[in-house]
Length: 154
Image (cartoon, rainbow, N blue to C red; front, side, top):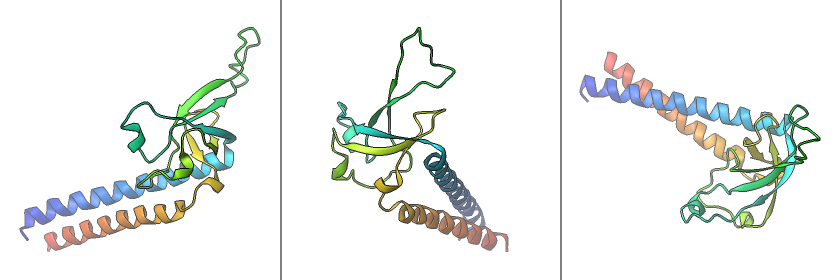
């Protein structure tokens, strides 16, 4: 392989692998933090009017959020706000049948940013396996990139 091609290929693979590992770590940390410190709620899967929305493996969820103490004003009469969001970290290839429109799903959400919602621990089947697969892909790309860079520098 040409030195320039090996250098560029190695740099691209190493960069991709490193970014993928950072992304995986950030997503896992975010999900764990929201599950531990977040507010539990029950969300309803919303039927999507967009034809392409049904192709997304992550369901569109709707749930009410109570306003925080700073925002709650008895004169405004606002009791709750309805939030539409997709859960973080749920990326199977196909949407499972249990996420049919109208189904109830247990979630946890960040009270400061209600759009950051994750499925509750009991709702997620193979999150650890998916996290390991993405991490293994990141490590493999990082190692392949490092090997190509090392070969190019010799």
